[in-house]
Image 1 (cartoon, helix red, strand yellow):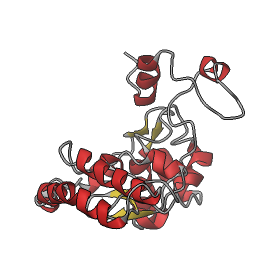
Image 2: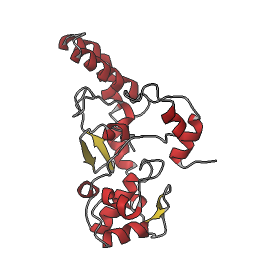
Image 3: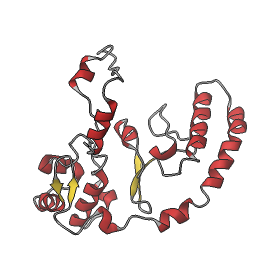
Length: 223
């Protein structure tokens, strides 16, 4: 699934991709999103593969240079030609792969009520279904009912499954029930990190600390 949490947190508009069973960031061919000055590239928007990602990054960078007035549109298009050809070539098989390996509905919305959807908060399929029976309409309300999506990973692991379970219980599509609001921090932050802010007025977080430990906490792989 695309790693779109940073873009969602920034307020980018999205579209539900029924074929890929995921949300995709609305972006033009240059990666420009609905948020002024913010572009996406690579697998943070759509699964294109490691070979295609640098080329989409090149396109986003060239368009950024154009928007900053460093190059004109003609220069951007000329410089982008090799990257655009590479993207088109690498995307040739993408539709077939997406159709062949499309996630099965029962994978994202398990039938077994004891399956754990949110590992961080230990929320099961049965608990989400019970929340729907009480009137829960979507993933954001599910936070209040069950805390699903409120753990250290902030929904990176359970967000899509939670939405799919709620959608199935309501007889709706994931596009209709929506996705939970993504709020910072996008990774676990310790009190030590907050205390080490260079300048609280700028909100510039220190990048040091035990990165491996924080990443393990985010993925639930505590070792």
